[in-house]
Length: 151
Image (tube, rainbow, N blue to C red):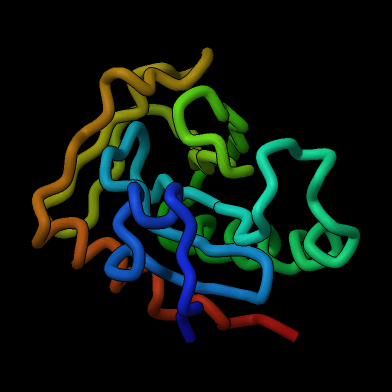
């Protein structure tokens, strides 16, 4: 289910084509530039530009969304750690870059993505930019099994 009014950050990150899941408050999308395999963008759909402005309902919803993110990425990527980075310097809507972290390289089909920053900070500037076909394949792989294990 997609909303009728996507915000600028959702659109910048390819909405609706990159959409994995959408709740009343959050949009989970595949990040077109992959610093690590399975990198996502978790975007608040409320019209807020400060984390403190997120409603109590959206904060409550965030728990379930992050549980699904972690479960799906653990299955698909097998990460060792996960980073949630709130880097609202250019895109002002409240959002997180979600990066599964691992040593070495992970692959899915013809997509190969090393974690060039391991074990330190992620190397965001060295991300692998996916082709449109690769982005579609990764998004589809993330969607499959998204609700597996949900209550």
